[in-house]
Figure 1 (spheres, rainbow, N blue to C red):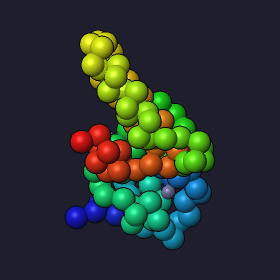
Figure 2 (tube, protein in one colour):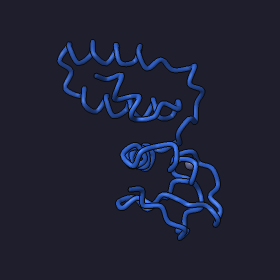
Figure 3 (tube, rainbow, N blue to C red):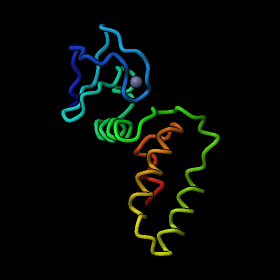
Length: 118
Ligand SMILES: [Zn+2]
C-alpha cells in the first residue's frame, strides 16, 4: 500500500519531478527521506521506485527528466559499464550508482534501468 497523506511537510516541491506541490494533493511521503513526491509521481511509480529516486536526488542532486531522454542512451552506457567491469575496475559499483543517477536525470525510471541491467 502507498503511504499517501494529505499532510504537507515543509517542503513544497516534488523531490522527483520538481513540480510545485499544492495543499490539495495526495502526496507520497517516504519513511526515510524528508522530501515529498507529488500526486502524479506517486501514482506513476511504485513505492520502491519512489524511494530509490528520492534517495538518488537527495544524494546527488537534480530531478527526474531534467535532461532530454534523446541525449542519453541507456544501452550504450550499460555496455560501456560492462566493459569497465570486465576490466576489473574496483569502482564499478560506484559507477553503477552514478549511471542510475544519470538515467534518472534523463527521465528513465529505476525499474526500467534495472530491467536493462539484467
Ligand atoms: Zn512529482
